[in-house]
Length: 607
Image (cartoon, rainbow, N blue to C red; front, side, top):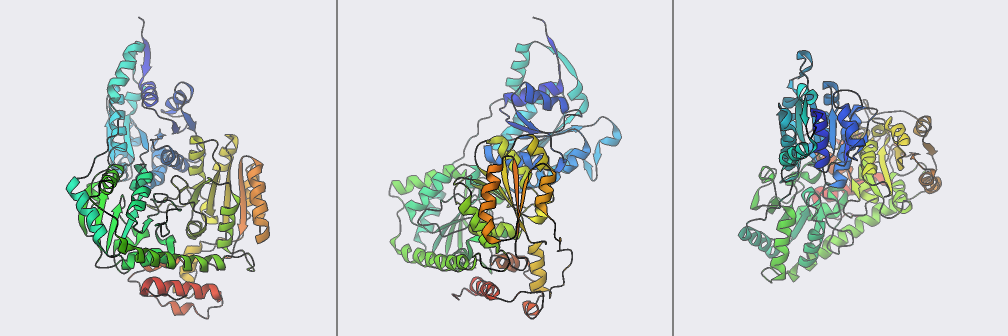
């Protein structure tokens, strides 16, 4: 049988298609342009060419998160490789298993990036990286990359393929090519590892024998798709539970033992729980800055930790752990469920009073913030805007959250507390990812209602992709919390540094007009009563639709105090300097912020 000439970039496209790739981003020109076209035309893979290289990796990030399978970022030049760093670093921090493919140029001056080769530069942000030196090694390297990405702790992986390998051509019959690809890829089965049975039982008994237990569900539960198991275990044990930001949806919002979250945006109940708990079961979470690092002053200094994690690197990373259980979140949770079903571990009725106390703290705090977030303020209150979004968008709308204080407002008022209902880049809090992440999710799911909630500063990072989304026929809602400033920074400057503002004012920009200039729907809103009608109109407009809402620049969320008190620990500041400053708005909102700070730091109950 006559053979056919097969280039390395064709072999790469064939192997990616065989491996089940569903989404890729890259440019039509360059060495990998042919691979991108073949993926789309022959392999049925959805592809997008971003207008800005920085946006491409974020598109892949969003798609990978949503589909629980790697998307590919194809970089033909060192410039494209460098521009993908932000999205790659975000994926690394959030344990998102996307696939980076770069070209190792044969031209000496194009081989190096600042600080080293592409492989060396990417090594700090990838779980696994390999240089591909042989044509026949392409399927083999791809198979290993995907196994590394999806087994154990998830993470991004990198193939740095020599340019000559991609351009090399071999004569092969179709059957030979298929066999080469299949053998090279090998098995892509993902295997879950159970925990040591003795440690699983010991850890669960330690939790249930404590007086004030707490369960913390992290991003590892989401990556393992173990939210049903986590929610079931919490209900069986009757133990108060919360989630990290990355673990949002791991415990359902209608679970009677859920005390609110995720993390800091759970407010006073979250802080009361971590301040007084004497034992915590932490599943799939390293406890980072958004959780106070598991350390005093936010956490009880005498707390005993039981940690479940699939990655030994995460064990005891920030916390002293009494029982360390190495294993996949779903597998270990099922082991724990069996122990309860078999009667080896039983619910503890004495925990009821602890749960009731936390739920009362939660109800009191929620009543205060809900009461403050009304529509009668002179300028629109961000809490009112966030709550109106929640009440107006269809149930099941997926939320992409992008910003600083905007993220806290959305977390406090917009969450459904269901799995795969919202995404925020918790690991690095990366600004500007909202629109491209939404495009990656829309490529994965063309039907589900989709909304981006972002600040005005973060909107500017990748606004050009709105035009791209319009041409691609993508529809999603973008709601901008437009306060004309970097509010998280301005708020800290007002509170801690006497309103000496440096680089925190953005000015009055009509972002609805910007959207219209890109061919999209855009409407500006300055009255609270117009928010809901504008959102409904935007959702009916088709295509990307932007609602630019002018909000109060002097209003900041209570939960910012959680972030600030943790981040500024050790910094000599005097919050009293803010009082009497004309730029600082003194009203009962500021009193509420003071109550919150006292309650979380000193374990009080100011109402």
